Length: 263
Image (cartoon, rainbow, N blue to C red; front, side, top):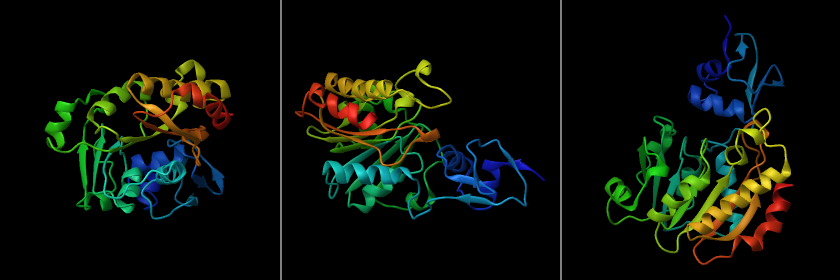
């Protein structure tokens, strides 16, 4: 009997859940009988071969994006208190733990997405149902305790512009914190800039990244680095990674770099 592709992946043990399966499908990692399929609702039969590409020990492919950013920007993790905003299945959190973070505070607006193996980590505190945009220093203190302020902030957020969350992230972080953020143009440009889920115009992609840098500047954060993501995002979107911190450069000094990585 035919069933949805996301359901079939979870049932065959190729994904941890339907949510995880949907992410794998949207990221273009699933083939059905050797052909890529990007719709979770696609019907598949028991006799059809399902393959998930690029499997490794990381709980999400997003882990490789953060690895590239930390290495490319030269950001150390060991001994730091880190905030993972939009933790989802925990790919970013996993990297932070492996690199020696003293503590990882993982927050997400959703529920039940964190990979089971990460829930057993005693250095990871997971808070579900938390809207990052609404965080304040006071609400964050109530959540994690008054003495914890992250000196490293990472974020992989969907369905919201980083411009809307940067003020909150800045407020809850320690002075001098490093911010390593994934910029997804598909959530920055608005619907008119997207065709079939993809931002195809290089100029719009540059505007999206530049807009994030200027929003960070307004929040008191300068730019310390910009790079292209080593892995495409959902539906093949070209994404970028940025390194921000107080006292770093004005975004105007990075606009040429922005155009280069979004071309």
